[in-house]
Length: 470
Image (tube, rainbow, N blue to C red; front, side):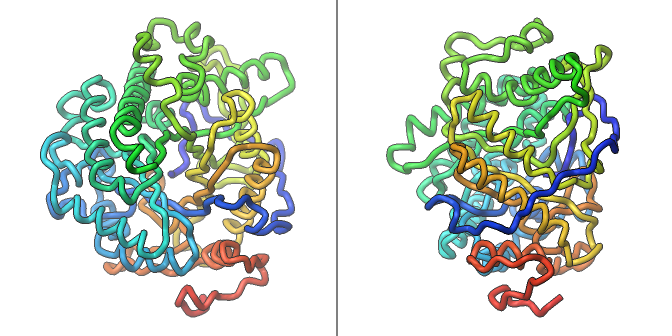
């Protein structure tokens, strides 16, 4: 997912340079047996075919409509080619999402047979190639018809509609899908997608949690015994550290953790919103009934972590409810990231210590680079190598982290700034055929997955990828 900082106040800082660890002193075999390595895409950013075969607009179509968005990577037509690339790379798993308006064009009711068949075909193709599908039910792209009818996540009606959509997915795909994520980064979506920042984000996330819990209960009640899968939710988790050693900045940083992590994880694992949120937000923070608290608590079998960077927090009375400003670390910008792998270790340690060490999957982690700048993305290799090493350190320190998914398998239609992309494969968006070409990072990740790790300067082209040297 494209980088969007929590939009409280963003202040650039160039106080320190980023740290970088030696990232090449480990191999895949150092990870526990069964640890999953994959990559990720999302429906709107990959599929294209925006108005084909019965699909109706999503909220992203409305907000970000463009010719490239209508086609994106053309994955709807090129999925077999893409699955072959994933297989050749050696992926264990692929995280992808299902387009709700492609599967159920009216948001509720009748299932679109062509949309249904596409996802059945795609999942079957993955399984034929030994790639485990990890399915996200909603990656931020609601049916526009529901947004128009009642405001999407702002209305409790969406809880039943989302649960019915999930029911179709469980019923139709559950024999082949064992890992379900309900909603993608609800804390980030709540913060950046609603105009009335004093009330609407809290309402939206509250309804997301209830929709997640409702779908999870349905799965566990009606499908789990037969299908033997698990279901969880993600959250967007930049690590936060005090800008100075002052008491005020330290308190502000803990407050930020409650607002960033606790907003999602407290209800799921501890049974309600953090006390500091209740105190500061007051009546603007929705409340759970006793029945809802029982529904939400322990509804997530795992936590999906979405992490890209570490930021400073400085105390500020005049800003948002969080009472702090975000200051970018080192040489970071919103789209250019330093290599700060210790931040991911801290996130995983925090989850372990504060939330009972639940199973964790890193469902997004990656580094953007200027699209079309070069296929030799050595900076991305450095980033991925360092962050995978951080995951290994966390596992060795007792974290129940069970998988790592790089974002993204190929250059996708990035929503906020399409000039920066995250892919292991370059996609030529000027080419009607959307030609895919491997970057240096594709060769590196494939070598790592297949046990033949190489440092960037020594990389050679893996013949299994089927491309000439770039």
